[in-house]
Amino acid sequence: MTQTLVGAPAAGRLHPGGEGGKLPGAFRLGLLRGGVEIKQFFRAKEAVVFTFALPIVMMTMFASIFHDKIQGAGITVSQLYVAAMLGAGLMSTSFQNIGIGIATERDEGNLRRLRAMPMPRSAYFFGKLWLVLVTGVAETALLLAVGVAFFDLKLPSTPGKWFTLAWVLLLGMIACSLLGIAMSSVPRDAKSATPIMVLPFLVLQFISGVYISINSMSGWMVKVGSFFPLKWMCQGFRAVFLPDRAKVLEQGGDWELGRVALVLGAWCIGGLILCLTTFRWKGRRDG
Amino acid sequence: MRGLRKAYKDHVAVNGLDLDIRRGEIFGILGPNGAGKSTTVEILEGHRSRDGGEVEVLGEDPGRASRQWKSWIGIVWQNEVVSGELTVAETVRHYAQYFPDPRDLEEILHVVGLTEKAGARVTGLSGGQRRRVDVAVGVIGRPELLFLDEPTTGFDPAARRQFWDLIRSLADDGTTIVLTSHYLDEVEALADRLAVVVGGKVVAEGDPATLGGRASAQATVSWLAPEGPREYRTDTPTGVINDLAAHFRGEIPELTVSRPSLEDIYLGLIKEQETAA
Image (cartoon, rainbow over all chains, first blue to last red; front, side, top):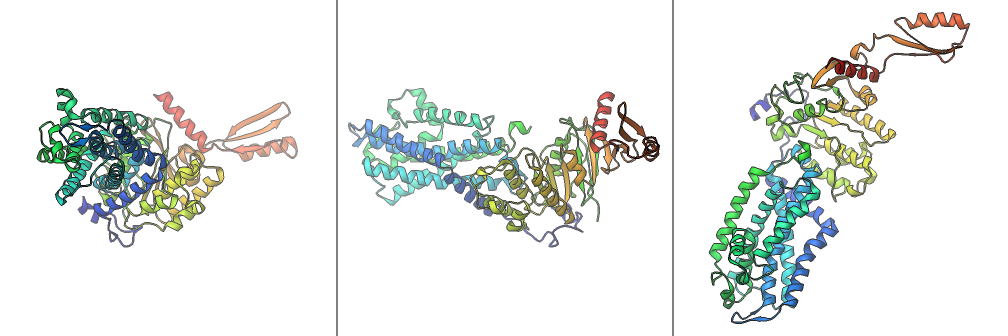
């Protein structure tokens, strides 16, 4: 195609510089998109409050109601909840916000406009990932602050644990964002986006050990939960924030960090494939 | 310079439609709802795939358009309204950054009449003002070819006139403009040439002044006779008026001479098609 362009009717073009003006690259456009996404997100006050406050409220509720010591694990139930809510909070800023956001943008015709722009599709996804990076890290920091201040949460003591925190955060974020992008094609319009995104997420939180600890759930629930990334994100966070004695509460009696990385990594790749194959710019009304 | 060439055939909604739009002209597309004009335009924009025929827009097939090609195209969609929490200036500036050679932000805000609203959030604007943001975003990239689909819906009369001036100045700069509109006066005021699309086909194409034999059609002379209003269709209105003047010995009460308006011609064409179908 580029070759025919050079031979295309160039005389009388509005751009006397000819093809001289270069189109910005995907990475640069992705950064620009990210900037705009972040700006828009933080200006929608209600959504900001909801996104950040909900996990904190949930964490405060659960961790305050259930605060007994767990026999033989050397931790309190509150600590367990804080670690689990980190996972759920991260998934809400990625999966839920991205899915609802894109479905709304599609319905309002913003995607159609973007598609008409001389922009590679990857720049759009990059922009979303930047938004998730900023909101996800902010969300995590807030939850950590509240956890440390009120619920005996200890910040990671070794560089190794900080490293684990970083990769669980990053892989979880990417996996859930890609899933959110893929899932955004399901809702018919902006109105149906919220229930369609929130309901499965809510179920997933229950079967992934966010509200109810893994060892008190029936086998099939754990099996289904183990298929999705949330369970593994929470497990990764428990490995970072709980003392090693608490391993006994895990399904395998261990943190299984290798498996955590494997499952999250697999979701990153699978999510990417799902995104590329199912993503559509047009809404159903666009035909 | 080679003229811009577009032609394609056999789409479900568009049945063997041929069009040639020349570089630098304002081309109007008229047609009733569901006639296939939006489909046609969307195919030209590269937003809809076609089932058959050949299309070439600015030397490329829009169905396989490159990014470079997209940077030459500007689109203002029907019913579209920019939304979001950005200000007017932020929105337009953001989209400017996608293009290699965008227009000046201040200049474009001035021509669409939004200079004073530059710092306002888009969400807080009136419908007509948001529409102007759409237009600003559509032309910010200095497009070679601009698609306007019902661009002035929701504009007040003064804003419409202002918008027409903007379109004319873009055309004077050499922008090719494809305009679809329900407002016949808009098409008449702006278009160099136009096509009427009915049932997925072009049923008439030409200059707005001569379309469908408009210039040579019979004139209607009407006046108020003592027994009531009278009308007379004729090829020689001057002769009729002479006779009337002699009859009334002076002023002819409520005299008008009219030729069919674009609307009359247009409605006539549509009726013809419906009867034929």
